[in-house]
Amino acid sequence: MFTSKLDLNDFMSGLVKRNPYEPDFHQAVEEVAESVIPFINQHPEYIQERVLERMTEPDRIVAFRVCWEDDDGHIRVNRGYRVQFNNAIGPYKGGLRFSPSLTLDTLKFLGFEQTFKNSLTTLPLGAAKGGSDFNPKGKSDREVMRFCQSFMTELHKHIGAHRDIPAGDIGVGGREISYMYGQYKRLENEFQGVLTGKGLEFGGSLIRKEATGYGNVFFTEELLREHNLELAGMRCVVSGTGNVALYTAQKLMALGARVIALSDSSGSIYLPEGMNAEQLYWMIDLKENRRGRIAEFAEHFGCVFNEQVSVWQYPCQAAFACATQNELDLDDAKTLIKNGCKVVAEGANMPATLKASHALRGAGVLFAPAKAANAGGVAVSGLEMTQNSMHLSWSVEELETRLHSIMRKIHSQCVEHGHVEGGPVDYVRGANIAGFKKVANAMLAYGVV
Image (cartoon, rainbow, N blue to C red; front, side):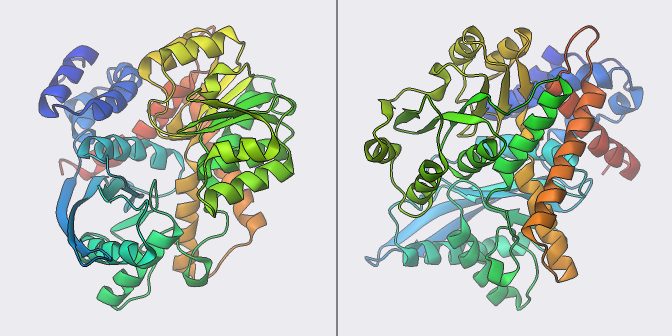
């Protein structure tokens, strides 16, 4: 029986050899492997059954052609994907991303991360990710509709309310989900909760849009309380101005924190006294309804706009990385450390590089990893599935209470498995081991499948 201990370098060499030219996937796996391999080496059953090797291989990868017609009558061709990574603890669950730069590498990294994130929620959710290299920006509603209908014509063969329940992600909002759900309903002749993020009129859940941002703040609040700190009064920077960033900012302000900076791909705004409610709602309208640039906000309110300057340059006590992967690098981490930042929370998926994460944690900065802090979105997606199954809808208050409870449970798991002798809780270690154990034990129970 294979029982020799796992070695991180040997494991990663094998993974890179099997998955060449996929740096994001390699990074996501290494971040987990650093934590779980020492734990696995204390439990021979995981080594014997090659659980980590099996966990880093998707159950299946589906790729397909998507043909559609633009408004000028030209035929366009895109590629669609669904990476069904692991369904050991529940049906596959994870978003769909529409982006011209989307690659299989990105989807594998996201699906792997989703395995641990969904496990931590305590809900029975497996992990998947999918999408297309289609770019919805600049397209008319009719063009987006025709693409979504063509995309779902193939995807519907691989999903279902008890098999795989996609949601939205970057480039896939309420409009896209609605078009895809309409096509699914037409093809299957069934009204079922096969997508989450739906409109409230046809089975969607309240606070789904806000959930990832709210959950990010709830988790950070618990983390700070564990270390005898509080958010109220803290100077906070938030990267991005998408849903996660905007609703992270909203909840921070509701809890008495001061949001002093936000950003988009063009640069950042700086408000040394903190954003007020009028400014926040103007920004939400700018980004969600008018699809404008952050410079317009700066011009309207007369605040500082710094082109191509990240929020990490502004002195703060709390930093929330809510834009995209690898946006916070080693130099940014050094700047945050130098400026006295006390906590960094990952609201996006893998926004900090490995070197940045190591530097922040090594300097004693409290670090909330994405698979824990970012789990609020999928948690409310899971609650949407429950509401669909029960044919009811919960109030905002009920949903926020349930979300807060889930984030509190995620924090407790991180603390339980992340204690380091003589130091603060290692939340990366805690999240990875807690997420791993639940999935790994289910895989052991099934045998070799």
